[in-house]
Image 1 (cartoon, one colour):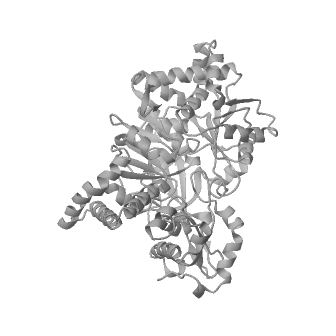
Image 2 (tube, one colour):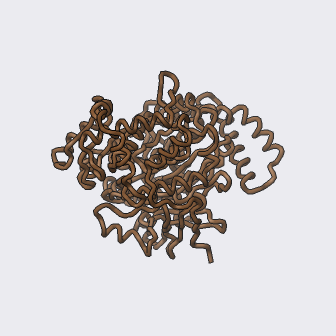
Image 3 (tube, rainbow, N blue to C red):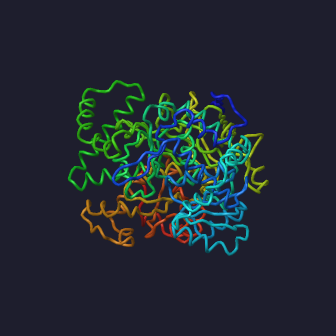
Length: 610
């Protein structure tokens, strides 16, 4: 019988009275002069010490108090990933308020839902576009009585207005919250329906930060540890890492514009990164296509295969053949070194979450000297419940449970979590809260399996299991993740529920497409319509599907696909802010395309081999 439960005791004694603001106070006491942040300054970066950050936090908190924000008030916040995001976050903690983060890409309807459902009485916006969406939503938001626009100088105005608020008032408010009080209200991404507000407590962040800092000490507690954040801080993943960094004394920079990420990495030179798998795929695909266009595609692919072979042998404890060692040393100088330098030259670790990375990429980055620490968690678990550790890593898994966390598998393989990281409840939704728990265990809706050493592997989502007309259960994630790694593929949705076979809807990656087209002798400016019907493009997508089909049985393999001449984006409503597909929305909007897959005999379109 396989092991179905692993639980690791907390390594740091719990402190029920501690709140998130205490972590900053402790950091300032321990290392007041240590650089806790760095902000862009010309072509470089200017450090901000722990003590200076706290001074700015207190000054802004005074402004919130002067503006009438009371302890426990909910305040919405729409902004990109910048230093000011965390400054506002901690100023609200010091003022005793509760932030309701709103994704910067949220539509007017989503802004309205988050603010109305939470009962927010104020909202802060960063850019004119954010303000415009708030204005459009505000007519039907009677509780939102105060708004601040950062692009109009609101933060400086608040600091000036709060100059006469006494320090003692801020210190009093800072200490009001206990561990079991609400710290923030984060709305789920809505991939399976209307977003639900997750009540995350101060203890969720404090206890998880303190325990994770011990478990990940090689990452966050080494001298000079630093990270450059570019995924949205409105998401719990980056928000938790920010709190962890303050607790551990990690220097954090921010880059909201991912189109200029590589220059920022080059100047900031972080020691670890936080990213979703799509970012790692894009870095790899960009490097491959750049090599291809320079006539060095064959060398790059050989280097990649050598890297993967080398890493697999190391993980499995096999002897590395001399020829592989020689090739590895050569490619390290020719290829791997260049990629390391492109990411700043100092990156030793990369923490990845939200979806499986795929063993192949994990091994590739490992051979660059970058250990990808895949983890698993949800908004409801304050982000990580499991994570691979520098001292205990298995590529292809999401690692062992963190200290203070327990995971068990239900009879059907559903992952259930309890411990220091599990949220308190869904806001104003007792029915959903009751449905989400079973005897104190949070039911994630994800499926997984443990190996004998307690490493968890994600095998799919319970709600996404496809049952074909022949009664075959198929987990689409296994196929989708593999196909999406191909440079021409943007997104993919596997279909086939109650149908005779498995099919797929595919979109193309408009960022990578021009380079790939040029490298393959095709016009770089081909339209999506033309690309969708082009034999070479279709053959490349077929190649990706054939590769994915080798991972599953014949009955689970994709027999047909269609390329849609469109993009699925956050703005189109088909992706969540962490770039996960909204399956139910896609199946509704593109139901006609799904029907068409099954209206035409298989033999007239591409059929997978095997």
